[in-house]
Image 1: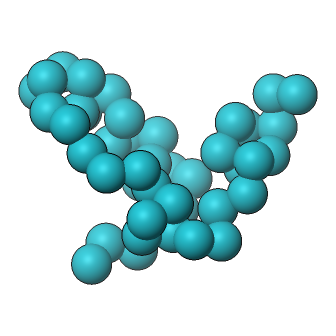
Image 2: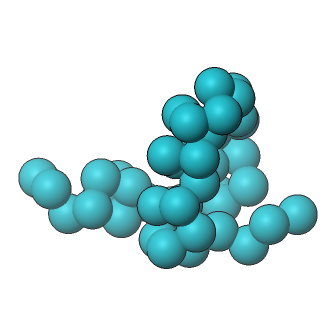
Length: 43
């Protein structure tokens, strides 16, 4: 299983879009991901 962090998620999202590939929610593999981190403190 991949150990996700902000940098790896930021790389994975555009890769999925470019490859037109679906993926499970990051929280399935990173259950401690909080809203502020997930949205980059964009609140």
